[in-house]
Image (cartoon, rainbow, N blue to C red; front, side, top):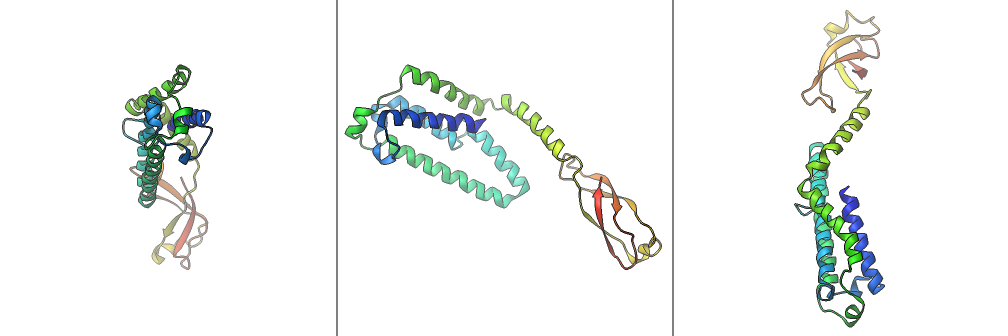
Length: 219
């Protein structure tokens, strides 16, 4: 949702600038804020939302992604954080070169401020950016519900392979058994964070020559 709103607004602004200047080169702009102050203000809000400024929409999504990544793998969280910082750097650098600096004659003659028709397309997107950043709970509840359903479906019948080690004193009396069922504490990576009691079924007979038995499934 956040990506669709902020990135869609950025493409809309690029289309507005291209319609006026007929160029996609950053060097062909500069000083746009002088001749189009409202355009530069709306573009700045969209840029700040895109780089994840707090109180705007992308901050919530980036924070939740980094939080979940930190739980799974903290190293990847560091790399992802560097990507967030670099993206903010190039977005602000782009904004500075396009909207600040000296206003050239081509910009003065071809760039004008937003018109009512353009405001009608841009204003709802800006409202959505602020709404999703300030009142994010109105969107998180249905998203969390659907995400929990997907996680529940993906964690059904997931095989877990564990290693059952048997001492020689225990292995000798049960050497002829084809299977062994034991209760052992296991920690599943799904809904139960406190751990669960699983039933382990051995694939092969336990003998004194096999100190460890691979287990095919734990349920």
